[in-house]
Length: 170
Image (tube, rainbow, N blue to C red):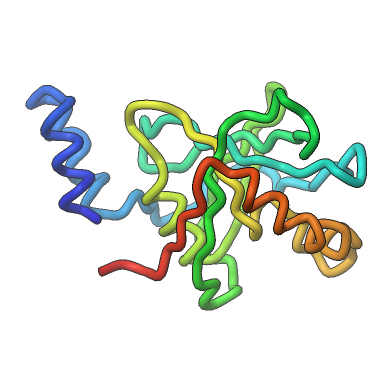
């Protein structure tokens, strides 16, 4: 994984850029502390056929910056996205991303394995849309959304450009 990232970096970046990004790649994009933003609270989905996609912004720092967008399964305007499937591992949220909503920023915590799969899919060249169940479905215990979204998962996966199964680092 690190070799692939370094190869992309060497191919497309200047020497100064490579020196600046190399520690970021070697660290796996992690930081020691979360930014001081308030925690994100999910908005209700507008319809029973709605779902969320995570737009992973281009990597310009060690922190993942994303936007959570609502789309409809039946809409032709739904962007091309990758569905990510991964081993959940520990469910304890230990990592974070910065979520941009309107002009506000929020901190969203999530598990290590979800962080690793998102870091693997993030690009320094272009933003990407992904569907990742832990983030795109409200996981709070009080939410009824999980029960409504699980029956849609087959359509969400089949509507993706591709489904990526992430089994861990090599």
